[in-house]
Length: 89
Image 1: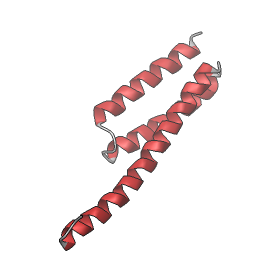
Image 2 (image 1 turned 45 degrees about the vertical axis):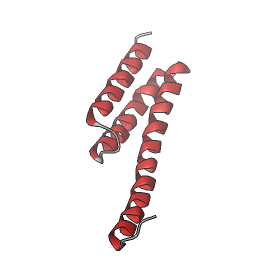
Image 3 (image 1 turned 120 degrees about the horizontal axis):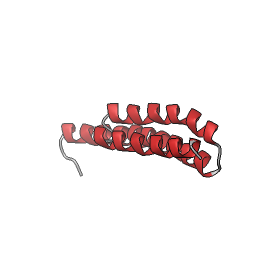
Image 4 (image 1 turned 180 degrees about the vertical axis):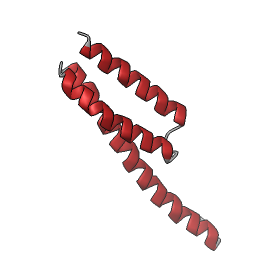
């Protein structure tokens, strides 16, 4: 348990940041999942449309330091390759 006022404040701040980060990460994962499901379902046009939203969510998570910048780049690279392979089928 925190004893000082500043430590108590840090606990409050960490709780708020955790909730905010979980929301950002959840939105990112949902967008990625939608793209993957569209590719798996053979809906290449829908996957391509969802790719820009997924990029936006990934970039936003990286900008807020929710995920590492290199992790964001890797996620985007994998999604782009997946969508390109689905379009080329």
